[in-house]
Amino acid sequence: MDLIKQYIVQCITAASSNLRLNNQRIEVLAMLKEVILNSKDIQHDLNQMKKITELSKMAIKLNEVLLYLNQGSVDFLKVTDKFKEHSFNLIKEMSYMLDMINPYTFRQTLDRLFEQEKKVVEIIIEPESKPGIEPASESLLTEFESMSDPDSIDTADKNIVSLDDKDNSQTFNSFESTILKPIKSIDSILNELNVDSEIPIKVEEYSKLMSFNAELSSQNGFDILSQMHNIISDCLLHLKNKSLIPSPEVIESIRACLIVIVAVVKSKEVDINNYLNRAEVFGKFLQKIKTEEVK
Image 1 (cartoon, helix red, strand yellow):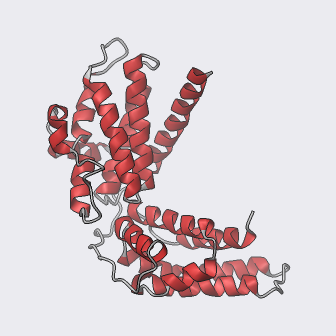
Image 2: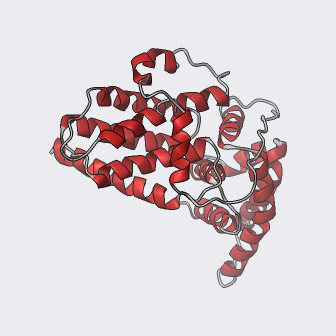
Image 3: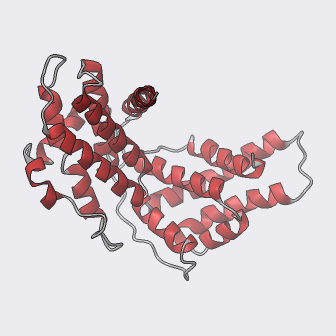
């Protein structure tokens, strides 16, 4: 275990607990922690981040933490106090960074910095959603009504951009449209399912579609979106193979994944922790089924 990386990541976590976080901000912080944990040279990577206006202040504060840890004379009797100090000093700069970027633009910036080692680049700043937290409720599901036609799977080839054809110039708006396109159709299927119902043939096609969108989400830096799509894809395949019955619990777990997807993509200021937790527990349950099938 790299104690320096763990210390920095925990500072980020402690600082973030003092901020109001929406789903996109949580995603950005997850990517930032991933950069730290996977870094082969933290000093170099922080120096690169200093070159970007939106990241520079945060990188400077993280660099101060790194210098303290590397000084070779850490007083362990005072390390708790120093940790609180370091975390507190990150709050203001972290808030500034999160106001300026979203997961899509942050991923673009990281790719340019660490893969191509280019000069300073300006990332695209998209407007932050309006402040204020709504309670997560069925109102979020009503958004499905304007997202897709229930028969959209019949024209799937027109709705999906092939991974081979997709290039780096794909806009966030087209990504958003692709991800949201099948949501209402899947929700419509869920409304028709019950323990005794026949599983529609098109469920298998939707499983493939969600697997595709999981890969697309991963490529665009949305790990949570990718996870939710994979869970839905696996579940639909289990339903098709009759290794899982469409019980009310299963249907509501799929719907929880759909709610998380909509909230993240549309930057909804809602508390989705309960839905996210339910989806993740359901994902582990599906993994257990898959493991048992292999045995």
